[in-house]
Length: 497
Image 1: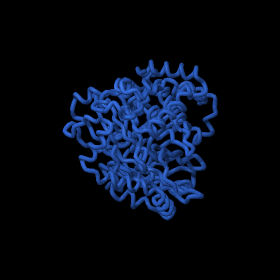
Image 2: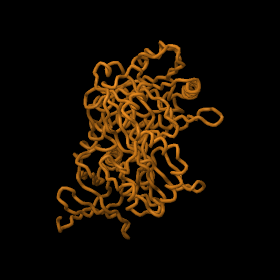
Image 3: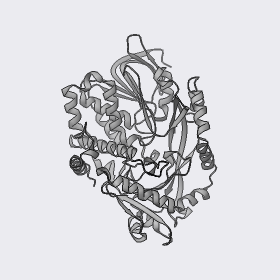
Image 4: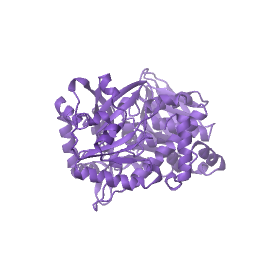
């Protein structure tokens, strides 16, 4: 190990080279071109964890087909609030990506986003009734006006021929479709944004570097102790603002920062696997993202879906994901991640949340114990004609579900994305999973609003934000004409529907 320690300063440090850091880095450089940014990533390249195409569903999450975003209340009615919020956020992402393409800051949109119908598919009286109610509630909103619903066997067969192959005509089934859905390669998009960032003055990206310590100094600056994993060289970096967007690695770093806002937060890791089709003839039969209903107790990342994907220029077909349990917080993490994350402040919330989520524990045990035959049986619920020889198991990404203190309940398990920001706005941490990447732009705009309060309301920043996101400050669901205009423009620029 080197005896010398390199010292440097920057306005901003981003930890983790995924979609979140890439998005924040680009937004900040657009708002303030002279800002200095250092990015540190433990692995050797960008988007190698949660943002990688094989490690996530690749769905442009817009709540068109994801049934878990529209929970059913005790009285049987459907709550559309979360679906509307996610759909709004994805439209914001589309606008920002279109801006980057128009400004030649990101190239070849066809490499990272493609049009593909988003469909929901259910069977059984109860589920068919749920889907019909969901359709009626959502279609009343401008964001979902183009949604179609059917219980007709031939119509659904036309939408999803592979799913209907060998299925009995008398089965009680229902489906919805949105033709303007998308498949997004977040890994490709992330690397594209980092390629742009790396060419800008004042930006430096360091791969193979691990942040070992984070401490707030009396001066108000943050000091980060970082090790170059290849050479052992040590670095101290001083900065005004730190963003931790390290996926499953964010929680341990939050603990190291030792801020009161992080007290009581814990994490429950959930691993994933896909069944990947190896038969080109089968792959060619399916052209949709078809989502079903999750099993009782299953986490949102485990909602079953059969997806057409474009990865590295090749059409793929995946089914899953199948959940599992590992004490790692990252796909490339350590088995000690979970035990080392336990602190006096979060042990009780984690135990309480665990006790209250026994169905989840039971579900994970069942998933871990699954045999290859069990997985093919699950696949055949969506693809009745599936043959085991046409599918192989692939390891997917690792997610960490957020556990936090709760005044009344003691501890709760959160299924979603959560941003923690210190009172002074100098440190922000992103925890959680889906819909994450799809809503990255909205999340980062919210972060900038909270953490750069002295600049966010200046005419220069407001003007730039409206240039990057034409609907900034407005709700598209409440403004159908603006929605129509924005969708038409982003579709044209990104070469999608």
